[in-house]
Image (cartoon, rainbow, N blue to C red; front, side, top):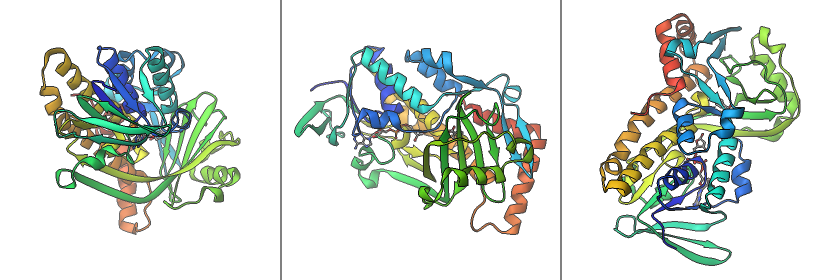
Length: 391
Ligand code: APR
Ligand code: PHB
């Protein structure tokens, strides 16, 4: 098999890249380890920045989003038994976020790839990028017991945090920065109307909580928990009771409870790998960086990486201009570190940590109090939450 760009991973990063390239006449083959059903069944976040929505539009996959997504112009921060609204639109000159699940984004991308007869090979085993530091890279994989080879000009490593792409870069040429938090999030999805029209981020002495949603009939809630928390110890009743205890009274009464459709624990960590290029291999999305979910930046960062990378590849194929590819890593990393900073800050602000002492708790209380009473501080939050520009 021969193509221009071999893409490893059919998550949002890989599918979006292949779709954007296709629309500019650039061929790609996407190789995915898991089955398509598995990829489409994963429950992930659902808050999209405007930059990502624009990119989905450019990729021609925003029709259903435009019909079904919800526009949010604010979020609530709750602490000390009270809720305070952060007026995202008012503080940013009219910006908003779009509520639309990553699961739906992935579904729309798969449908678009199918409609354009894009090649997405799932259940590809032992996917291995090779010769990426030569002029003729290739990717081998096995499928149905047979070994295949994709020859290409470039390899895009879009295979997530546990992918193979990052591991083929010699350790001496890659720096990985990591922060592991002693916290997890226990998430529950239910077919119940959301507790409120907008998201509520809750700082509580029993731990952080988040009320989110997917649609007017589907809710997503999270509770801060231990990293090794056992989901089976959390029957629905226990989850709902704990959530209620962490919510301010005025809103707790509105909680509509119902059976969980999905429940899972995710550990919180921050990771950045540098640089994002090794020869003809480019890393994008979770393959290159992880953020804790507190600011809803993971999916949005994947989108901005793909914006920069697709621009680099398009300029290269259209006019032989290599500047975008040469500058990709530096350009993407500037935005990545800012989102890392924001997610790290929001995580520290809203969670309780096992080794917190009285001083730390006092500082955190003061910062929350300052935040919701200072237009300057709220503007900093709002500007980052709606998404920094694609520079
Ligand atoms: N070979 C082929 N595919 C692989 C391999 C491999 N060795 N390892 C992993 N994959 C696949 C995974 O099965 C997954 O479908 O790569 C895909 C990576 O997708 P994601 O993990 O979703 O990463 P990405 O596309 O970068 O999406 C951005 O942002 O909000 C966060 O974690 C959230 O998934 C989201 C991410
Ligand atoms: C979600 O809806 O899953 C969600 C929303 C906001 C976050 C994280 C997750 O910060």
